[in-house]
Length: 491
Image 1 (cartoon, rainbow, N blue to C red):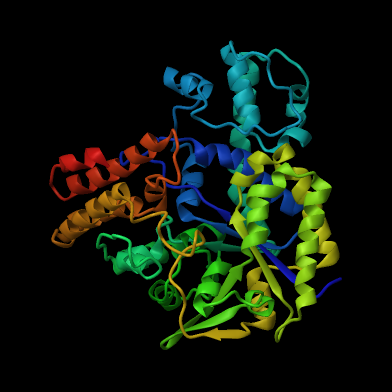
Image 2: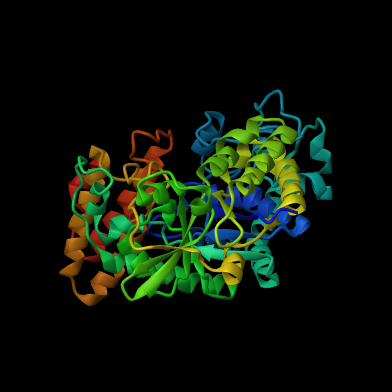
């Protein structure tokens, strides 16, 4: 067995889909991803005993709690609005198209056919292959309304099981559970949006400064995580791996022990590509009287898992991964065994793998356990601690080591300006009105609304994301006693 430590960090994230009135989810992704991916990922870990780090964003876990309590509804159910069925037919709700080991109906003319296929496509592969109730759906069949109802019940059972499964894995010590600021904001931009000009001085960036919001988003995340999972997290994956010295100083002050970000941030910090012994070690970042440990992901390995291996034959993909990790040991080491961090979204990639990624992940876990030393980030730090020391850190994210995906384009800038105008009005409000308005502002500070306003990320669902953003800005204005400005309609 090689003395190379391998740490997977699976980032589980969904934005806040609820409108201000509460209860209505504009889009069904919490429900669908929970029933298919979050459940599957937990079962793969249970089956293999594989140690890793799992990062949950509170905007996801809170919606999972509400969903499990029956307090969330969405229109994408049988018997829902007619436009929901039309959205499915027209592909506005993208369904997983990878091979699931199930027959694809030749026609979706009947409602029962459409909804059966829909629920099967969004059911965990583990349940499809192991739950006796799914047995008959592996072969050609003519579904009935009762079949649709049974699949709907099965989906809800899987959703109910997600948080208890991960809490049990955390309690056993097999996995380390970590978090992200509550509504997934780009923390450095909340502290001071002008940070975006550090990596890109030529960009036009509107002024937004709310360091108190950044602190509150992080503080709430730590409190919520302890409530859901029974203990405070030691680590954090900042939303989109976005970091700056100011944002990390804030996290260190709240007691966060370590954060993870992208390897390109280390390269920019050092002013050159890092040597393997530099990339594959944790670093202590000195921040005045505070410090925090920073670990940097292997960008290439993480992106291969996210975007490439799904189209490769299983054996070739696993062999390529193992070969690349093994090569780390041939480059020499630093003061301690190398730590190879692979960090990526824990749900989206599996749409593009056969059988929702189940065969690949089970084999990958098996080979990593056989040839290397899988670990959680926290367990590695307990044993070896950080080996390097940094006096500063580049400001940027996992995408191009800058912030351009969330700020700098005209539509994004208008959204930031609208948020800044609202934030100034809040500062002048009485305490009760301010408290109510801030609840909506925190939602609107989430990264996703700005992500979907980027020209890089076109989506037929853009109008739905814009609706949620505008609704919470409007509700904040109303909480302050003002009519929402007409300019919100253009965002």
